[in-house]
Image 1 (cartoon, rainbow, N blue to C red):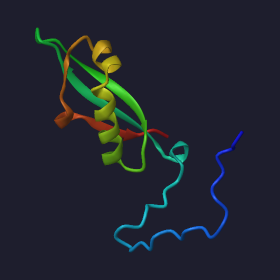
Image 2: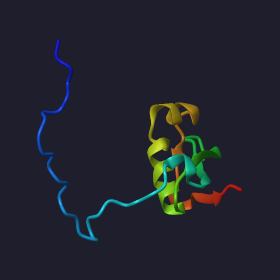
Image 3: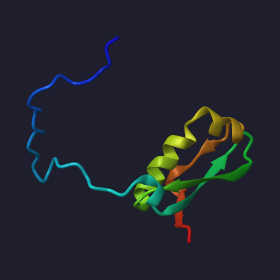
Length: 96
């Protein structure tokens, strides 16, 4: 039986990176601040409401982007019963 070990010998060095392409040294996601993103919704018959998302992100813009991805998930659509989301009027508040 063979175990998937790398071949013995010299290991390749990582490619040199420049400041523009260096990976971002961020904190693990569980240490990011918690943002509460509230998105207005409008149903086809004119009813309005909101849908909120608790998101961990470094900035408000990152939180809005993550909430946008979550809002388009099937589970989020089902929860708001087909209502449209209006991200132009969404707000993100830092939870303390």
